[in-house]
Length: 598
Image (cartoon, rainbow, N blue to C red):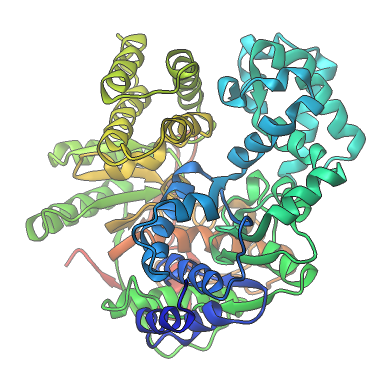
């Protein structure tokens, strides 16, 4: 018997002093959307909310909770938090089945695969086969690789690429176009044991058009929890909507300022859309626990958010003093960074350090040269999801993994080591910097699986590893790499944390970039600073807020301290030098830079 009063008392003790968290947990509203930045206690609040609902019998057997997120890695972290905390809250420590019987946590593709496993034959007879035995590819892969594009005609390619482009631009294809897309995949790819990521979602979406299937899931899941909701694209949003019945409770958590995937389809203002469409109660969390003992980083986090909320005209009282480097050249900037890293390592030799940049460039080459001259051990993670080597590596891992483990799905540490050896053998003689880094990431990833995930059921472990390859998520293993410094793109670093973070190239034309600077009428400020745009029309404002989101994500990767750096020259693509200035972001209200080189 669950003791409701005891659970309430325990929850109040855990969340003592945080009225917003308690408001979320004990709310009598059945549909809640939570603005939850990183470090604000999102996961703990979510688990306590579920425990409370369980205690008041809002989750009745045999109904379940469905938790959705964007990767199996994120889903597994959430599931483990729930598994470790929920039983203790509801006083059922000796009943491990409580989680598996009550909570399903997965990513969108994993959920859609489970739906297709039950009902996929209604879409295509070949889907009686487990989709986890198919190679999953993207439309961009079909464009790049002859093995894939040779399977279809130019007209069929135009349809597949066109629908993918529509989804990335936030437009859901019409029913006719979805059916044509699925028809091409069914006829040309499924017989080869290949499926696209988009097809997995669209085939599940088509199944939810069948009322009996939609009603089953609406009744089966009494509560839907969605994490990182700000990154939801149009197809994922349609799937969520098909799962919501008249009695379905909702808990959506996200941070609109961390929406940095608009270029691949994350819907703008999705949190506002959901709030209005489903009459959800919006409750923002306001206490930052990551920086609670770090006043300067606390102020920086708050001040960036205030700038974004008030359209870059905030009222701020507590100034954040941010250490920064300025040099006349990129070579000088790189030397400042290397010197500070040596200083940090002398004072805190266990502190984890990352250097983040917008993208690969000649500046990065200069930085690497300086790190090597300074004898600083670093890991090169400056790849993107679209890099051909990065894509090919994941496709090969996916193909060889399915071949080795797909039939039995039993994965031992020994067999996993054999797998990584086979991948290394396939790249024997390849001296590419990216390939070397990917092999290092693969080893770090599999070592983490071997040490920390032995408790997973065979099917869970198989799905977890396969998802990393399918969705090109090896970059999320950078936090496990043994190196003094991690060099990464900002987008690649999302979801990861380090003690110290250096953000390079905080300069005009780079951060923010061309879409803003080309239309900006600001005059250069006294000294080496660029001022914010004077005329904030809708286009410039929206672009600025998108760029500010990227800046915020980079800043909040640091646990202890963030450093900004810039130089008076920048290199164009043809390596010609151009004059440069500190970005207008270095002049946001509430930010005061000081010279970190002294």
